[in-house]
Each structure stands twice: as structure tokens, then as C-alpha cells.
Image 1: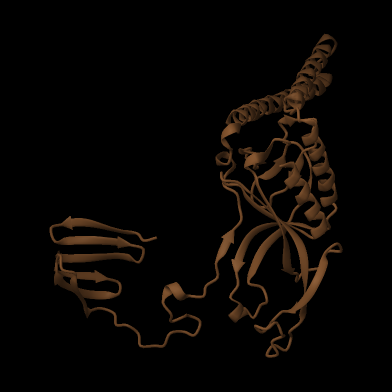
Image 2 (image 1 turned 45 degrees about the vertical axis):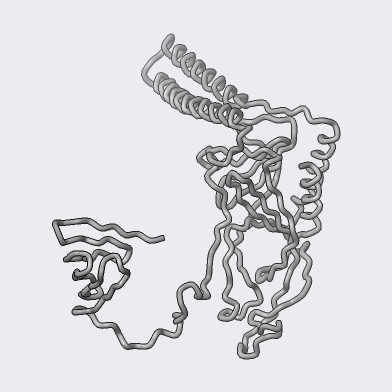
Length: 365
């Protein structure tokens, strides 16, 4: 992306703004002088013909030193560079699919009501604290009838607080879906295979992927990933009540995922919400060869070994004295995405357990 802007100060004199800085141009098209941090240049040419010449007439000279060894002298488009790709969903509020906007609106209204109710609870708690203090003080300064009044005052505030807490506890939207028998059986099977998946020794959230310059690093991996351990389980969004078990997938770099029978929800810490219909959810599964430089999980399969520094043919690079073997594991990889901006990837230590869950998910969808 390029940025360039030109501002006219007065006839024949312009300021040029660009990413490299500010320069000044004096003259007219075909004959002008440009001053910038690289020096002074004379620009001549015939407008409209494409004939153009630029000559340095003053300022800093170019260095004759050689290009440093760590910088490539090839054209920019041929650089062998490292690229980092972040694996992260869009902001939840922009992810919702077309058919779920009304449900999203209702859920957001529920969040707002709960927020206001929570504020009322905090006020009620302060009133109870104040009433308790006044009651204690009354024993020192007031006798008889007034002590009874302070006791009653505290009791009333306590009842109000308990009533507000009960309202908050029950302030949920009941979402129950009448699934056809066959689909319900498949959903129950999905739940059972998900329970098996939960027994994986390790589950990681893949947050980004980087290309690896194998020629420089001598690594056997063409890509490296940044991963963070996460937990899967069962849990509902706090404003939803459902008779169905809800799959809860922790997300290391964004809102957590909740899978209901008809949709997937993503909710972040600020209660921003996105909803994706099951039909719109894109679910991918594949086996992942992973060079494991950390402790190998007990349920992982080691399929071969490689070396920290390798030649193109896979043999150890003997130029490195401290070269060592590294196990290559077979993991299960799951990717969840949608056309609206969902983009999450997970890695499971047990390929077999992940595969069973993936098959059940495919059958249910």
C-alpha cells in the first residue's frame, strides 16, 4: 500500500508527503527541483511524452559500502521472507449469520437487563452494609424501640438484596429446540464423542502460523505455529438456559465458542456476541504431522523422528555438533470457520479421539 499526498503552498512550490517523509518541489512540470532527506534533485522532461530524467545536484552521496550479508540483493518480490498469519475470528458483533439477527437482538437485550440488574444488586449490597453498621452503632448510642427499628431496616434491605439476586439467577432465555428423532440421536452421539475428546491429554488453540525459511534455519518444518493450551467442556452462556448439553470451546485469542443444537455462539469478555447457524458453520478435520519439541503427550502417536538441523534429504546436518533428534507426532487438527468471519483452529494430542468427534460432527451437520 502506498501513501502519497501533495499540498500546494503557492504557485510553483509544493510539499510532498509520503511514508519516507516530507520533501519540497519548486518549479513546473518538465522543469523542477526537489529537496528531500536524500539530497537535491533536478527533474526534467517533456510533459505528455513519458521522457523524464532525474539528476542529483546536491546533498548526501550514496554509500559505496557492500550490502550486508543478511540482506538479499534480489528484487523485493523475490525475497525469501518470513510471513506470520494470525488465526483469529473477526469481532463477534460482525459474525452473525442472516437468520439469527432477531435471536441476537433478544440476547443482547437480555445482557443489558442483566447489567442493570447487577448494578441494582451492588446498590442493595451497599444498603445492607450501611444498615449493618447503623445497627451496631445503635447498641452503643440508642436503646429500646430504636434498636428494633434498625434491626427491621437491615432485615428489609437483606430481603430486597436476596430478591434481586434471585431475579438475576433466573434471568435467562430458555432455548429449547424440538429436534426430529433421527437428528436428536446424532446430536447425542456427538455429545458422547465430545466427552471422549475431552479426555485428550492436551488441546491447543492455534493462534498464528509462520512460514519457515528452511534454508537458513535448517529446520524440517516448512511452517511453525504458535499454540496455547486450552480447555474444552460443557457450559452455557450465562443468559441462555437449555435442556441440551452445550459444547464449550475455550478460545485463547478471542471470544469462547458455544455449540448449541442449531447454532454456534461466540462471546468475548465484553459480552459482544456473534451467532452462526449450524448449516453455515464450516468444519474441517485432518491429521497433522507435528514436530514436537515439548513433552510428548501420553496419548499422542509418534510416527517418526527428525533432527533439529536437517539436510534437504532428511539426514542430520553434521555441521551442527549439538544436533539432536525430535519426535514427529500425529495430531488431530480441527478448523472452524464461516463466511461471516469465524476463524479458529485447534490441535488435539489424540488423533483417534479427534477423528471420532469429527465424524460425529459431520454426521450431525
